Image (cartoon, rainbow, N blue to C red; front, side):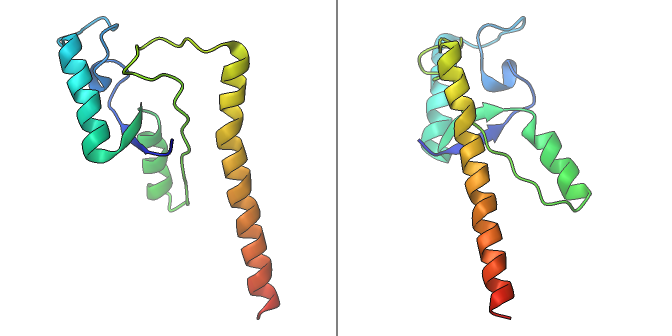
Length: 116
């Protein structure tokens, strides 16, 4: 599935996880939060590193992008249950997407040069 990524301040509380050291949420709160994020904003992924990276790129005026791959369906639990082989496969999907975007841009640039 393709969807939006929500940037969070931290891994546990801001993502409404129940397995952190501090937790003020109930299981119902967690599911309500995740369902609302998905329904209202199309969120399929939550993470926290991209905000800092993209802020740096923006400040340095360097084009940047982030491609995420979700490995946990938070509606079914917070722990990774995929095998090592599955995780390696998941790792390849964003890489293939990025390589295709680069190839497309190279082809576009060649076409622009030839048309000049």
